Length: 422
Image 1 (tube, one colour):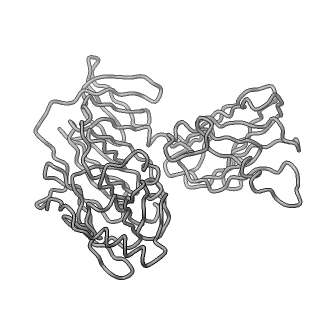
Image 2 (cartoon, rainbow, N blue to C red):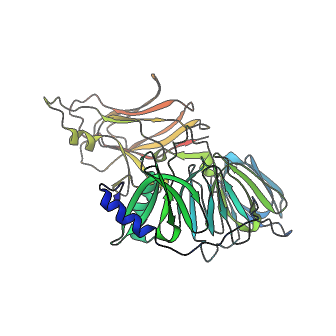
Image 3 (cartoon, one colour):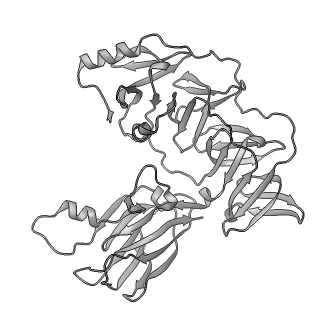
């Protein structure tokens, strides 16, 4: 349960009194650098390059950037374009322990450190090596200061995604309940957070809170990004990157710049820039074609028949991999989304389900703006039809299932792993 505010002054005073008790201080850090340690000169790492089609090549890495990868093996130099690559895997081992502070960025990047500090114009994540990552104010979404029990993971995700237009302190109360205190995060110091609440600035000990959430407006567009994971379990959504002799230099869409030793890389996942699953996109509209006209609309019936994303028989959830979600049309209807920047093709297989023995001939349509760009017939005696349609980035796309029968029986279909490709 997540409380978005406290309804009485008495309750708020009790919580604040509990929070402001003196807690453990964090180490004061100074002389910070703005990059991850490069370490010493090292041998080129061994890597495995996997193509989108499944073919693999092994060798030593010569170079990698946003456009191509070059490796050396017994056959010579192998070069591959980024839009043909699925993933570049390294042989480095994941760290046995996670650093205590988890920071989540607005673009989906996530990283770890030993301490976080700064003011509202700049945040700094400190590592035990004495280096730090500078985080622009518009890039940070949330910071978690303590290990999160399994039973609180969903509540924490809800706290991050909640659309309340203010910063917040998140505290864990007895009974595994998360409370949200809305205000303004002013400064994070060695042991306390300066927090403005109802026009008054108070000091809250870090040890008394679970985490912080910053109010940020969503990005206008999420650009295609390569997902880079490191041995400390950080995940960076890189808008651009390139390797040097012994490190990788990356920059995210939100302006975070990081220098990572090659010895700290786990994977460079190019498929996240080459493929975008439709389940990751915001649904602008999902409606069902009416079977029969009722004097009063039945909202619950329309919701149950409207198109939606599913995985293993369940509706779309926060902890379901987008690649494992299909788009279910229980009945003819339409779903509207917007095509992100950088993608040019819509792909899927529209397949009938096992819902009943009755089958009806249906039409599968794809629209952009007011123009129908694809139309395919799925006859009653056919199981599926393949969809591969050129689309224009930045425009709305409507996926539609239509049928001439007024009863619309035997029309349930699934769009299997619907995706966009560059």
